[in-house]
Length: 293
Ligand code: NAD
Ligand code: FES
Image (cartoon, rainbow, N blue to C red; front, side):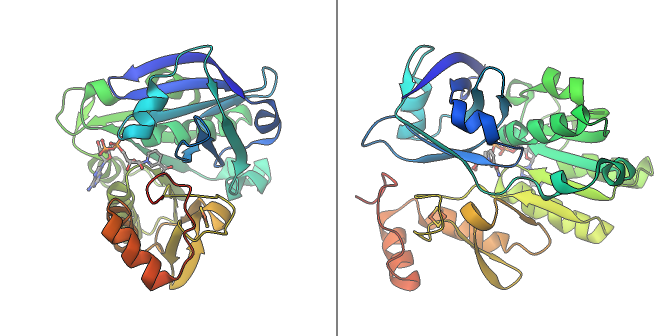
């Protein structure tokens, strides 16, 4: 059992929880994720790690209460427990293995969309801890949905906040901000890391392809086992089939088939869609996600 030692409501529907999970905290790195389960029958929910403390043995997760399971999770309080907290899963960010002197020469721009700000934070924090500067854009629909701004400001070289409705920061979406930085302020970047909704990562990748900036995205599809066995998280990357849980979650944004990923995400929401995927892709989905059995 994994105790929630701190809970914070970041916005109406976005919750942050610091969870005692010593084994995960001991070895996790930015980019990796965990799969959590409230109880025996609960849905397995994959969440990219937002922060961790090796000293305290804790891992911080951030999630949006959108469905039955995440609403149940959101109702948990400090002192309550998760039944399962499995991880660290997936690969850590590839650039972590690059020598610090090489990374120091690179200008990296992080693009965080909405709840995607949570998985961006540990990456910028890790770089900052090694003395490597990185710029960051946080995009949200409105001011109340801007999360982790203070935390991000403490670790980013330059932080830009955009809101779709102009209620805070620059008015517009993250792409408007990238265009402003690159085309109007003549900033140049060697790499973009974009994490947020699929539609955002698709359009950021289209823009950075046009601008000639290599781009990494982090995919957070439906996952079941998180170990490459069930096929639930399959994604087409450069005409190859990959599994986000074991091959990712980070991929080259210029190669990901976002349209297919978005279609799959929609299909998983209905029983008919799940049946169709099972027929088309084979019996790779063996239940346990809480949707099918
Ligand atoms: P949102 O819909 O509020 O969008 C956040 C920001 O993304 C917008 O304010 C805008 O700046 C940008 N954006 C959205 N559509 C865009 C477009 N077409 N072009 C350019 N920019 C665009 O985001 P949300 O509701 O916080 O996100 C929820 C989604 O994010 C969920 O589907 C969740 O699965 C996903 N998510 C992914 C990860 C991950 O690791 N990849 C992590 C957390 C959440
Ligand atoms: Fe990736 Fe099952 S969750 S293969």
